[in-house]
Amino acid sequence: MGVSKRILITGGSGFLGSHLCERLLGAGHDVLCVDNYFTGRKENIRPLLGHPHFEVLRHDVTFPLYVEVDEIYNLACPASPIHYQHDPVQTTKTSVHGAINMLGLAKRIKAKILQASTSEVYGDPAVHPQTEDYWGNVNPIGPRACYDEGKRCAETLFFDYHRQHRLRIKVARIFNTYGPNMAVNDGRVVSNFIVQALRGQDITVYGKGDQTRSFCYVDDLVDGLVRLMEVTPDDFTGPVNLGNPREFTILELAEKIIAMLGSSSKIIHTPLPTDDPMQRKPDITLAKSALGWEPKVLLEDGLAPTVAFFRKVLGL
Ligand code: NAD
Ligand code: UDP
Ligand code: UDP
Image (tube, rainbow, N blue to C red):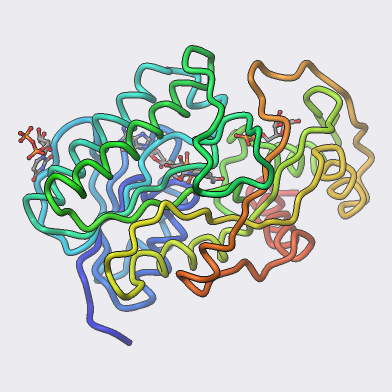
């Protein structure tokens, strides 16, 4: 075990944040979880509450925060389209004001800071698979813009604080990730399909289902985030893609989940949301060479514990 650090995780009671809290506590660090519980849930961190090195603070990152830590993982931001479009102005504020506050904090205390960015910065990509040097194809005024442009502006702020104030920054572009601790009402595709299949409800494929995504299991993703934060030399900033390069159509995902659960659910097609990207698959050459990272968990193997989690939560 290495040296114990004090680590702040914003969005720490959300899906990814809760796994990251657990992982860093397990490595012997002091973890401060900050969250406003907009999409995060106390149940996600309940198992950690008795841990002597775990602390929780209810706080909204759009307001300043004065704490003393060595590292910051900035994950605060709703990630599911239905939740980030519910209050789009707040979504942009969370990404932009949240980034400014956490960067100001990192500057004052000389902490290293990591931004949970997203494949959404590539928008509906014209380059496939997506490499980090692709600048993206984002509609700046559409319903997804609050999230996509908010995250793009956060990346801008990270690199300007790096160039202007010499901050030690890390930017991870996270592709679709799934696993236990997603909320039943999260609204993203993997949790929706599993919950619908378990309840015997219709599986809602938006559009024809020929759009593609690549799904990364949460343990792999968390491993990538920690490697990025801890990689030596310290001057590797990214942006770096973190995701699983195996690509599926949404229809294939629906069929896979129905077959896996032996579910009686039927697939129905509902309208494709505006600006829904048609394809998405990370090029992870950089993550492999700079971090020695690549995902290990196959979709089939990651779906099993995810299904078990939802069975338990739903009592089915
Ligand atoms: P999530 O919605 O489960 O977690 C986000 C957390 O941030 C929640 O606990 C929420 O309550 C909290 N939060 C939101 N606004 C806040 C605010 N103003 N102040 C404090 N806390 C706030 O989503 P997730 O999947 O765990 O995503 C975590 C991060 O990773 C997000 O920044 C997201 O954009 C990024 N990301 C996730 C994925 C993915 O597939 N899971 C993909 C790309 C990027
Ligand atoms: N900030 C914070 N915690 C700190 C230091 C700063 O939340 O410990 C916030 C504060 O709201 C500030 C913002 O970070 O406005 C940006 O800080 P910076 O020092 O870059 O600029 P300032 O606005 O102070 O000139
Ligand atoms: N999707 C779907 N049915 C659902 C939820 C999502 O067909 O119940 C589709 C959605 O249109 C998109 C893909 O699945 O093409 C991934 O959606 P998600 O919201 O999980 O994440 P995104 O990658 O779009 O941010």
